[in-house]
Image (cartoon, rainbow, N blue to C red; front, side):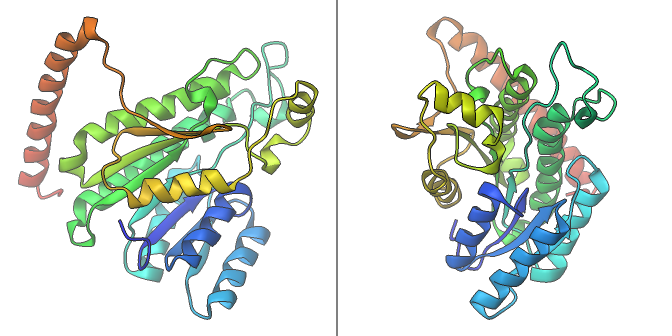
Length: 286
């Protein structure tokens, strides 16, 4: 996909990596909707980008990614402002604020496990809205959904188990949705970065990394991986790891011992997907 002339929705784009990605896409000729809860920083970023480019290339929408209606409104605002959507980046995320011995942390809002709600459930909601839009609007071309996972999406964690479970779920979600690329007019990519130099690391995590001599990578290689995920149309169901040693593409693992069984499952799923698609078209939902 060409970034020039494209329109992206980025959640969690008022600061950190989302902000840097928004700036990069605009610099390459794209347009962005900044979806974030931070009205002050989000509005300021949109204003700064528009002033820098000299035209309307960015809009801000106050968005709580855990609320379907505000996410849905972000999609509507992007369509109203720019006429279309091409890219959806599920980027908003938080760290774990409670543990097994402290489940009454105020940050979890009465033990609702916001870590799971923001890092996984919100990604599922943003992806569903994207699928619906791209499937119903083939004239805009194939869309791409990029979802931010983590190194903990690939490896277990004893210190942030809810975060790791959510990020592993993001990888599974991306790989699963990628199987209906033809029917949904959408391809999917997951990014699994190492520890990145963003505000999310502040506090105990950054101190622990420093004490353990664990490196932190800058945002630039992660942003480059986002650009690669957008521009390379061969990437679908792929996971891009961005570690200190560089970026690697991981495809779905198929072990020789279960390859035949997996083929049977895939064949069954393909027939169901095609049937569901045919029914949706008949009901004029697509």
